[in-house]
Image 1 (cartoon, rainbow, N blue to C red):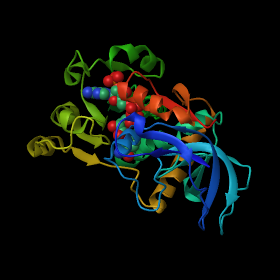
Image 2 (cartoon, rainbow, N blue to C red):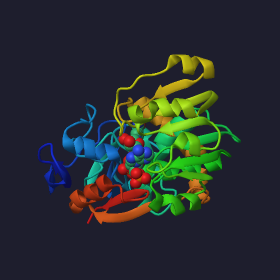
Image 3 (cartoon, helix red, strand yellow):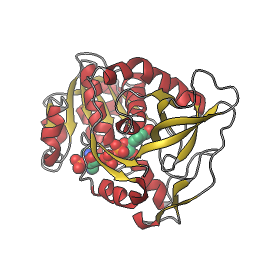
Length: 318
Ligand SMILES: NC(=O)c1ccc[n+]([C@@H]2O[C@H](COP(=O)([O-])OP(=O)(O)OC[C@H]3O[C@@H](n4cnc5c(N)ncnc54)[C@H](OP(=O)(O)O)[C@@H]3O)[C@@H](O)[C@H]2O)c1
């Protein structure tokens, strides 16, 4: 098969479409013939040499894919060769084939290509907004980076839960985010989001990390929950525990990729139960910025690095 190999840590130019050995399914795995994958921010870090794949996963980038099952490993039941699926991966989505533990497979809730961009965002957003933050109807949630793959999904999911949604993004993305259901859209380059929020947030889903920690705590309501899932603004900052105590606040941080397959399977099954029906009935739609042929993954990485995209950049197998 062909896959995108990272020739050496570096810029987009180190991504090369080349021939590599086909994967063999281990017990409890299937092989998926990949139709499409998607670029996640983590792929850019992996390419630069800062985010190694967890042990046992392929070295090629790609945290999600869609395609058709082409082989079954020992002990697999409930899935058949030819089934159309999408999958949460520890790596290896930028390839013509990938072996996937069955617990990480999902049925395709939309078109097959656009389904490639759903598993990573759905699993991340559901496990954090529901699992960690217990976001409830009528609460206010602040979603940082509303124009990201994560943000465009989180806005729609939070609205479906009945929350009031505020989000931060550069102005060019505001109209699209209002169309997705955001009630308050804040241009973080011009306004202080704590002021612009117009009240306090019960839940904050943060991707900036250190840069926003103090202001996120400021923006939290009493009993508020801050969940940090990204460190785009750095990893170390001071935390005012006095303010945390006064607000009885929770500050949590999570990462999906390194979780063991059993935890990923639990999350995938929760997503199938609580999120997939919303996608099937159109309450949540995949937001695809554009589709790039997989051999041109370098160009797709440049687009994502520039932040000019809104939603997901997909990669299709030629
Ligand atoms: N922990 C986990 O399990 C997990 C899983 C998946 C993703 N993530 C993290 O979630 C984040 C989003 O991932 P993605 O793949 O969806 O990313 P993405 O599509 O590449 O989007 C990144 C976004 O960051 C926004 N941004 C940049 N600076 C900002 C700032 N100061 N304030 C607010 N927004 C800002 C950009 O929007 P503008 O153009 O508006 O600036 C851009 O939309 C990344 O940090 C990623 O590592 C974590």
